[in-house]
Image 1 (cartoon, rainbow, N blue to C red):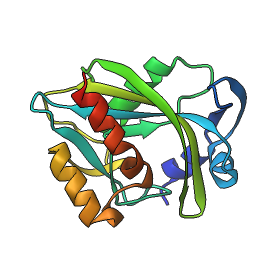
Image 2: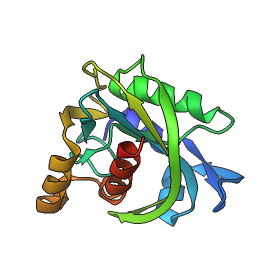
Image 3: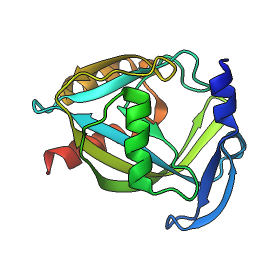
Length: 180
């Protein structure tokens, strides 16, 4: 595992209650091992054709390596503005700088991912981008624009190629996107 990923495990995340009220701060890896509810965000970028930008997670990631997922996701740092953290992470992970982002909905999910538990209060952001991303290879090994209907079909036929949270949220994302 790369040193950057090891250091990333020691990062602090924000513990929250079911209404997203902050109740504490703890190490990310401990929170994921114990399944504590914490704040996160997921970004879904679409182009003008309605295609979704997905990424294939780097093989060096501490969980779900080499699986396809949404454009970007992470955890906001304590004492930081959520919207600023979302923009910062999109730039760091996918090299996308100019993209207006809007929180569309939030939800809580609880999924076992290997030996870890993703129990997150997830803020879901949508954005529109017309170029090609320049992903950080420590984060994403590949990317592609996909038609959401074709993506749903591929997930049904090949569920093992996709992250647990992405499969869980995709239908809701598509419904929200189509209703805008």
